[in-house]
Length: 152
Image (cartoon, rainbow, N blue to C red; front, side, top):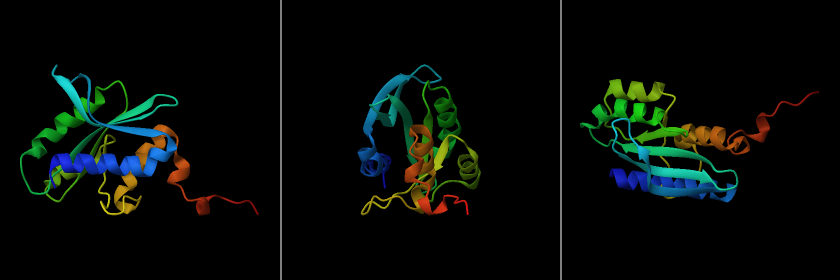
């Protein structure tokens, strides 16, 4: 899978699962400057038009070991500099153990690999689902009603 294919998979997933709840998905959106002064291009931009809440999502897929590892610390730092919530969504089996540890421990990163055929919420989308729920107040989509405490 290429980086653009992964970006489009994430965009399709969010649109499919959350579009009916007022979220609108855009790809390749120019949004200010990076921490080194370059024009920033956001892979996936999600906004709820009703209240203008938004999140910027960078998508990184690493199918085989390579040099993308070196870009992760910069990408995470750049997301911190945004004026809106920012997130790095990642998948693939080619991450080095050190960078994978960094991603797994980062508040600004979420593993997500939707099934392209089904585009439904599942274990491999849970991290992104929880962040979208927190950003847009959509907890009812990720917390099962069966887990609600009932007084006896």
